[in-house]
Image 1 (cartoon, rainbow, N blue to C red):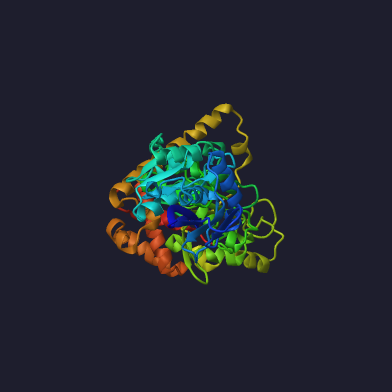
Image 2: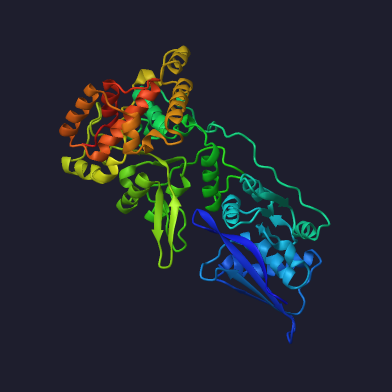
Length: 512
């Protein structure tokens, strides 16, 4: 019989590539059934042959005696995952005469098969559908959960199936599969996490958090143990607007392809908080199969690094590229993989190894040399890429334990209550979006800054003096202009004022 080809997909990095499953059957001079699988399958695919035979048998289709060849194209790239179960089963059925090969054309098939013929959802539906659409395919057949992701793309007819038998009936024309509608549920601001109103005091740090949320700026919190650094950082996602449009699709594609399946379209921004023992590959990606790291899993959301100086130096330095470009580039002997990693960095650290350097009441036990060595773990180039650096002082006793319950209500009503901050952040984001589209202030290019963040003469002179006194780099100067633009947006102003430049300088801080 002629060779049959069925379209499937394999996940790679934070995306997918189209895989053609070729099948050919030879029943001559062969006792029993032999299935030969080629094309660099991984261990999951190698053991799929028994699953496929059981699933086909459960649908009343038995492979005849002979040799069945299954080849995965392109042969030079390693294929991985159970996502290829369904196209392999259909290719085998077509090659042995159970399915009309013409019915398989123009369609992308995805899904894992159980030995009873049931179809199970697999991650990567959106990434695979993108690869299929780019290759000219216009139909997708997949398990319901996977199909809901793929249905988010325009230009595709997506059908959801519960079993291999249902797919076979659809292909034969006896019973059509239902078309899956796109997920129309609106995204939502993260509400499941802790609220900023639970944090007592720390109004200056809360305001810095709002500036970071409004402009997408990186933030470093420096303070003694127990001052509330981690408490603040974990509340940033609640201040950020939900992902919308193309950004929502991008977040879903990355998380799903990496195996962190959001179950449909992502409704919230990701928040990743890796332990400081995380390796370089774990933080930015790598390993034998170029797996995505925490930086990619935080794409479109927040990457929180607690105890920043305790991370490995090579891991921290590897963050410099994605902080600048929004991508991680991994080079292998035969390929080069680009992983999206446009995240918002929030980090926290103590001022010294013992944690009490500069504290008002607790004496520091560290020598000046050890303090300098500790801070030097954060290199100048990395610190230069973090726009905001705030010193966090622990709240006093009366702020932590107010005498009256009413004092808590009064605190929420201040400028740093979460509700009021969210309103100001949303207005600032709306203003910037109307002015420059979807580009956050933190991502403005020098040319865009010249157009939307012109400094007044007094602000320009203030920035000139600060650059000379602090030895600010060109990158730091541009970062200060971006932060000043965000501060003006938070005040509902079109033009920058000298006060915006002064506030940006105060928010930048220093590790010295």
